[in-house]
Image (cartoon, rainbow, N blue to C red; front, top):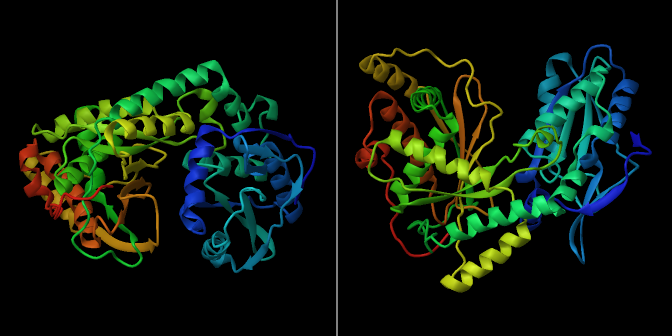
Length: 465
């Protein structure tokens, strides 16, 4: 497929592009962690030529798919090409193997690292069934889209394949436009406010947030443990409804409580992945918007319901101050380090990557407290906690992600086993479930949280991460 006569321009990289590029550059040759995958069904009747035409039109409209990120003398820049060619492999599959083969194909595509300075950050492949286009798969760098941007891109491709009319390119907000806003005085003011907020909190972060593990690190050092639990989802929705907050705030409170139990640290500091799509123009922008935000909460000795309310309020502050110039934040970190004699690090992350705050297809439970306890206990018996995979390095200590799953909450916990062992990670996930179930059944006193959670306190308090 070939793109011709699309917009060609360059500008400074946006704050979000810089932040994710820094992480990808640090990781080097580990593409799987920051490469995103998607499959788009091809509508019946669309030919090979129709797929090629749809791809050419979509790539021409979406600047970020033609953007290279180039480090120069003045910093990272986005260079948007006006023309270029992508090779789209075509794969033949049996009709009952389309989805399975598409997954295998996109997994193989993910194995190759994107050269973001020289290549466009996207790869496509087409799966045929009975010689007819059946599914389009794509592999796209996280430098090009975040989770919300990927959902928008999927919708863009779906509409292009279906021949749905689209808005004019001129009316779209794209990363080039975002870079211009960030360089404007309103953008600079926003960044300064966010950096001041972060600098104040960094002044409180203890030198040691998570002590080193007493056990040798696992090989590979970074591991992921997953939980799929209907009990977590049901309990989280019950608690969110009672407190009139989001389910995200409930899960955030559970993580804060479990981390505090493991480390003995209170208040708890977390890095929140901030979506940042508040303004209407960003809600439809295909590109990266997420940045890291700093969160602080006193776990305290009140009820878990109180902690949920505090987390909700504190998270709002974090989200309000999440978008910032990464260079200005680096300067603020240096100022804090000069004052305190160490660089504060917050390697404990929370990322709610769901598109919706509620789950679909959850089992029904009874409202009477005794019956509710019985129903949730039955759901807990179906919970699955599994070791998934591992990596040699990632810039994290504890990273909890929330993703969509039918009829259950799906949480993924990545840990650096130099600080949190594999079994401790399993206990943390089980502890989140136990805590939410206990709080849903009764008004849980946080002084009893240790008994409910069952997380083993960390062995030492030396070291820092």
